[in-house]
Length: 147
Image 1 (spheres, rainbow, N blue to C red):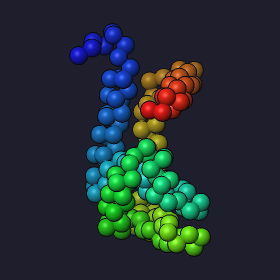
Image 2: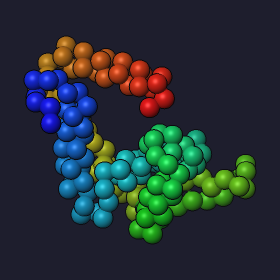
Image 3: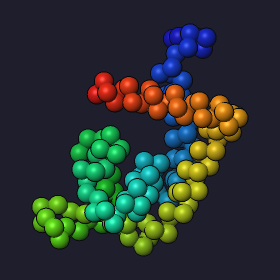
């Protein structure tokens, strides 16, 4: 195992992600959801006017179709989302957040905003900007490598 002063970026990024996910999962457990499901409901709600379909979620959340299908089925069973046949293409089903899911959106958004503030909390505005720019640069590089 690499020591902290070895600058193991992958380990550090993973550790931060796990801490944030664990915190969000604990907070969303009372609704029978995890952080990924909460983000999915928020994303569908924010974009349902565009006619969101499952394929869109696969790209946004970088998950395989089977994983997205499983998550959507769980959200449907709990009454948070539903799929409706697209008026433009009967082969596609658009995704919509049901009233029960919409009631939770504000809580999800508050939770995710708190996480954002936790990330930035120990940094001054200049450091926040630098970190953001560096992370975008890493993300763009990895995206170009098709990772």
